[in-house]
Length: 326
Ligand code: AMP
Ligand code: TRP
Image (cartoon, rainbow, N blue to C red):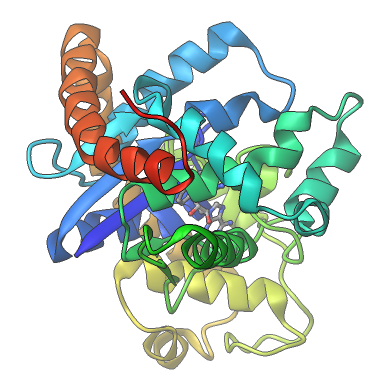
């Protein structure tokens, strides 16, 4: 089985990324041949700083390894090192509807936040479809916010296969049962994101323990005092999910333990669990990040493996579409 996922080197990685991304990557790498891509080409679709992109790419590689990916068994690489991604994206543009792209909520939301809306932001999901399809991926571990993009990738694969003959595996998205959508601690109706959400409501994977405790203590909760999940209690429900993710327990067992403990006690306990989760990740990250020579070497190993895996699919795409090949 082939597994593929991608993550953008923009902003500092968060507990949301851990829950919907890193945690799942490390678990799924055990299930087959896995590819995890630092999607640097996706990072230029909104206003960005070239110097930061460079640093963030190395930061993210370190974080992927620190959270459990094993670069010996799994292919961890940067998208821009494999030119097939940019080529596949252009070719797939032939089977992607303009109307479909215009309906993507991420395009609408991010477009509204930009003064200059780059055409790359509009075409973003086509590049993402290429990422996935080039590797004949069977499963794609992602968070809930990527569901619409994944569905579009499936549509693109199906349209290509029926127009030009069977080339692509149609991938399935894999979403975590708990924690597919971690919300901001300050606004439980907004996603906890690397960019755009409040600092105080966002737990970064490199936050110091006292910052983490402070953020949890000031987390917004709801009326009432029951630590139990409910529709009208988004704040508490989010904290229960975070506790479940941090400790590997079910939300039900968290509710059982803390149901009557009161919000104050519970918030502190969640903070402590997250501090404990993050501590070893930080230590490992700091070690890895300090050795840039080794990071570049490992990126090179990943790039070679990824190029070899992507090349046959790209060739089949060109052939199926009628290009003269030499
Ligand atoms: P991004 O930061 O957009 O590159 O996302 C990388 C991965 O983290 C994707 O699989 C996202 O779905 C996931 N992710 C980002 N934010 C959250 C969140 N708040 N809750 C759960 N998963 C998330
Ligand atoms: N769009 C994804 C995000 O914002 C990142 C991404 C790019 C991706 N290419 C991918 C995720 C391929 C999974 C598979 O999180």
